[in-house]
Length: 456
Ligand code: FAD
Ligand code: E0Q
Image (cartoon, rainbow, N blue to C red):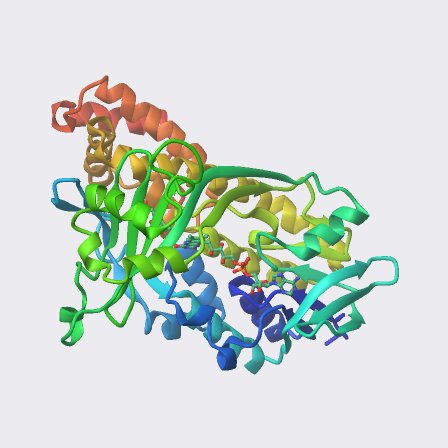
C-alpha cells in the first residue's frame, strides 16, 4: 500500500469519532483533537442524559463501521410519534408501514463513548482537552490550547473540521478565504427537562409508552420526549426565544414557567418532579440553519457534519446526515488516485444539495410537528398516502419514510415529496375524508403522472 498522508481531525463528537474510525480502518494515519476532556474518564455533560433519534442513514454508516449491533443493544425502539392532545388524549402515528420501519432513541453520551473507543481501537491517536485556536494555512501548522491555556503547535497538512455548529476551523478558513457563511436563526430555543424512571423493573419503570417519540404539539411551540434505556425520558421544550408570551425571554425562571406548563402540558408536568431545578439549571439552547458556499479550502481543509451544515432538529436527521457524510468522505479519500483537493471538491458536490434539502425538510417539519399533526387536511393526505402506499408501494412512499428509512438522496426525497403532495392535494380537492377519494382513480393518477420509485 502507498504511504497515505496524515489527516488531522478537529472534534471528537459523533461525526468526528466515526469519521476517524472509518479513516483509520482504511489505512490513514489520523490525529484527532477534541476540546473537551475525555468523556470516558471525565463523564459526559455533567451526567445529564440527552438522547437522539437514530434512523436508517445513521445506522447504515454504523453498519459500515461494524458498530450497529453494539449501538442498538443500548437503544430504545420508537415505532411512531405519540401525539398528546390538550385534553390528555394520546394517539400513536406510526412512522413506517410495520415494525421493520422504526427509529431508535440512543444516548448521545454513550454513543460518543462507544465511537471514541472504536476510533481508538482502529488506531486513531486522540488528544483530549486540546482546542484548536488558529491555523496557518501557508505553513500548514495549527495551534491548539489546553484547559490551562498552554498552547502547542501541530502539523495541519490535511485538516478536517468536525467541530460542530460553532466550528473554530470554519472561522479560521473564513479568514483565509471567505466561505459565504449564512446563519439563519430559527428564533426558537430549547430546554431539556427530565422524566425520571418509576420504581419497578423493565417496562414498569417507564411512566409513558416506552416505544414512542412523544409530542405535545401546541401551535406555536411544543414539547417532545424520547425514552432512555433506564426508564427515564428526556423532554425538550421548544419555544420562541423572544417576544409575546409564551417565550423563553418572558419566562426567565421556573416560577414564571410553571403556570404556563401547568396550563399547556397538564399531563406532562406531574411526570417532571424536578421541573424547577431542571428549568433553572439547564441553559436555553439556540437553533439555526447554517449554509456555506465553500465547504473546503482546496486540499488543505474541509468541514463536515454540523460544522458544514447545521440544521434544526425537527426531523431528527442532523447526526444521521453527518454519519452519512462520513461514509461518503471516507470512500472518496480512499478512492484510487484522488488527492485531497479532488476528494474534498467531490464531497461538497455530492453532499451539499442533500444537506440543503434536509435543512429545508427539517424546517418544514417544525411547523408540521407544532400544528399540522392536528390539521384535518394534513391527516387526510396522510391517510390517502397510507392507502396508496399499501396499493402501489412502487409509486408512492411518504416523504418521511424516504428520509428516515431509505438511502435515497435527501434532494430526491424533497423533490419527489413535492410532486406526491401536489397530487394528493389535487385528488382530495379540499376534502378532509380520504375514503371519499376514488382509490382506483388515485392509483391511476400516480401511475401515469409519476415515475416508479427507485429500488432500495
Ligand atoms: P458535535 O456533536 O457538535 O461535535 C463537535 C465536537 O467538536 C464536540 O465534541 C466539541 O467539543 C468539539 N469541538 C468544538 N470546537 C472545538 C475546537 N476548537 N477544537 C477541538 N474540538 C472542538 N440529530 C439526529 O440525527 N437525531 C436527533 O434526534 C437529533 N436531535 C437533536 C436535538 C437537539 C436539541 C439538537 C440541538 C440537535 C439534534 N440533532 C439530532 C443534531 C445532532 O445533535 C448533530 O447533528 C450532531 O451532534 C452533529 O455532530 P458533529 O460531530 O458534527 O458536531
Ligand atoms: C423524528 C425523530 C428533536 C426531534 C427528533 C426527531 C423528530 C422530532 C419531531 C424532533 C420527527 C417526527 N422526529 O417525528 O416527524 O422522526 O427525531 Cl422534535
